[in-house]
Length: 223
Image (tube, rainbow, N blue to C red):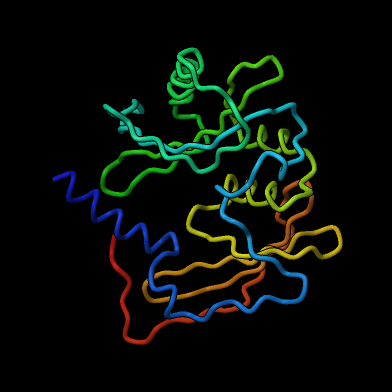
């Protein structure tokens, strides 16, 4: 029965994550100087100006059961992989330890699936200056790692870590010292665009709805 629930959730969640009915809503028209975000997986280490000494880092997600323990044969999905590292037995052991070390209720980067009570954890792991694997533990760690946000890759990573998962960052434009980010929210029956303005410290200083469309005679799926 859980497998059925999982498939139901995946279908509904795909709508929430903006992959549903995208072609039925208007495509944003970018203004002069506005640029589309690349996919996170396309960024390289050279796209970041880290405040820390980092030769390699990745972002992975994986499922955890309601008791906050790894599932049997967990499946890891790589969101971003930048830099090079030789994954020998020692490295894999370090990553296994880090994966289990952050499985605690206070860890910030997790979402809970409706109906299933399972969690999906996200982890950013990196090699420090001594060549040891570590994982970020707080949202502030990411800001400290990034330093001043001054590249597209850093802005995209910060949004991915700090914003609610169902908003899609579509494009950005530099306006003075701020980044104006265009977000989209797409569901089965509605479409919305917003501008959110960020300073170089990662603070969202302004939020503005710019477009909202709703289909007539349409009912959203009930979770």
